[in-house]
Length: 343
Image (cartoon, rainbow, N blue to C red; front, side, top):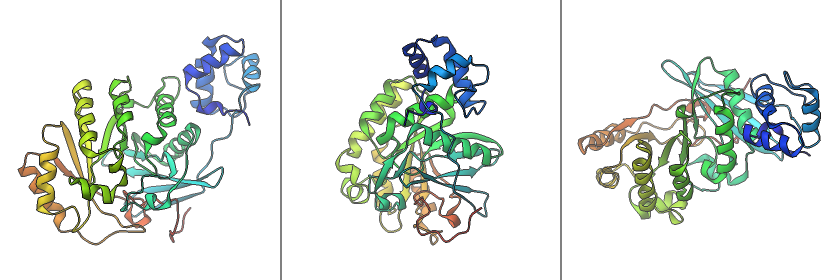
C-alpha cells in the first residue's frame, strides 16, 4: 500500500510534489485540505487543483482516520479511548479534565519495551511503534471527545523517545499553522531518559516541554524498577537535562512515582533532593496506581512532599484521574483485563 499522506509534514508534501513534477507551493493547500478540512479522497481535495490530487494519488494514499473501538468514562470526567490499529496493535489515549480546560494524553507505541516493573504497559512488552498517522488519529479522537482541549502530553503507552521520528512528525503536523495549529509550548513529551533524544531536543527548534521520569534516586533501586537505567544511567540522564535547561533557558518537569515502602522513605526524599539540586524543575509526585483500578491510600505521600519542600524542591502532588477505569498513570494496558463497559 502507498504511504499515507496524513503522516507527512508540510515540508515533506512539498518535496513530494516537486518529485512528482508539481509546484511545491501547493503543499500548504494540500496540507490544509487533509488536516483542517478533513479530506478523505485525494481526487477531491478542497481548494487544490484536481491535477495535483491525481499526481499525489500515484504515490500516496489517504486512509480514513481510525476511530476508537471503545470509550470508557470515569466518575471524575476522564475519558479513555481504545484503538485497534492494523496488525492487532492496540493502544489507548486519555482525555483528562482540568479546572478550566482538558488535556489529551497520547500513546506513541502499542505496549512498551522499557519493562518498568510498576507499569501495566511495560508488562505487555512492545507490540510495535505507532505510525505518525496513528498518533494523529488519537489526537483527532480526543479533540472530538473534549470540550476545551488546550494541552497535549505524550505520556500514554510507550516510550516516545524510542519512536521519536514519528512522534516528532506528529508534533510538527499538529502545530502547523495550516493544520490544527496546536501550540508546541502546550505539548509535553515524557521519557524515562533516552539521552540521545534529550540531546537532540536540546539542539532543536522544537518548543515542546520535556518531562523525565526519575523513578528512584538510588541507582540500584532504579535499575530494578526501570531496567532502562542500565542503558541510560540516571546521573547521565540528569547531566543531559542540566544541559537542556541551560541551553534552552527552560525548566524541566521531573516525575516521581511513589511506591509504598519502596522509594518513599525519608532517606529516598533526602537522596532525591540532593540528586536534583540546581536543576530548574517542577517535581511531580505521583501516587502509585496498581494495574486495573485505584490503589490503597498512601499515607507517606504528603510527608514525602513536605520533606522535599523543606529541602528546597518545588514538589507537587499530581492529582490522579481516571483510576476507576484504569486510565491513571501506569495503568494503560490497551483494555487488557478491563471489565468496565464502554460506549
